[in-house]
Length: 321
Image (cartoon, rainbow, N blue to C red; front, side, top):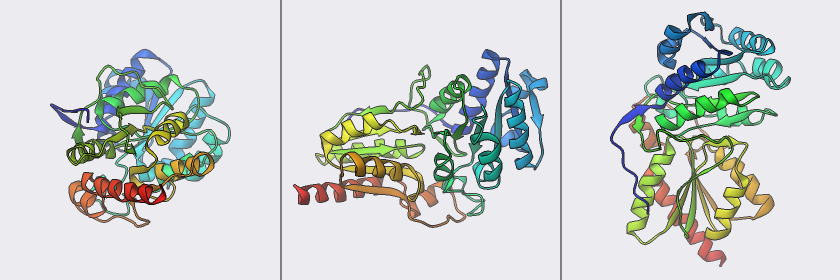
């Protein structure tokens, strides 16, 4: 098992804020809009550098999407910012009609996604957003794993033409990817090559998958771990190549098991290579109030549960042999 270490922890939303500033420096057409959550979205530095390119919309998320669509029509590259729940569930009609349907170049940037929003509870902890957004034709869906990758992804989507949903979070998490990485939309990242099981993880669950891989290695199980930061378009080639080698799959995500990464991989495998699969995800329920660590443990989104899923799916593989 390849060793990954870290010297610092940082929230992925800060990666978005720093990436937005850099994207703004590189391209004068980049503009930003926020729905009264500047501090939470870490947009302060962009506003200081480019005050004339920022629009405070207030608590009017649907209006923000409409304005962003209009700005895109005029050649701007708008980045909208609010919580993931408000970025998707509250404004789905506006995204569908004003952005996706006409292929507007709008970047929908969503913080505080998943259970790790924490104490704000179920009303704010959206666990359906990946499914909602990936179902929209032409929508790119990205869920990076740490500060560095989120910063790189933010810069990359400014250079990509078309609607994008960029998902990130509130808690501080280990920084373990390359600070100078080039983010390739739609290209999975091989975290660790292995032969016994394929673990496909996204977002905060990538680090948990690495921890699980270390536990499994001590028990003689060689796990292949792949970071699926781009859920749509899915890197089908990487998935199928890995599964052809290992013969079984675990998917890990901070999302409802219905409609998320695991769902996408299951569809791909059903058509191309039916394979035993286990899901580490929220099992069709809402969240609740608690600390991020408490919630990740209670809902089974941690290294311990990835290890359990791996052992279960390997047993199924052996039964089918």
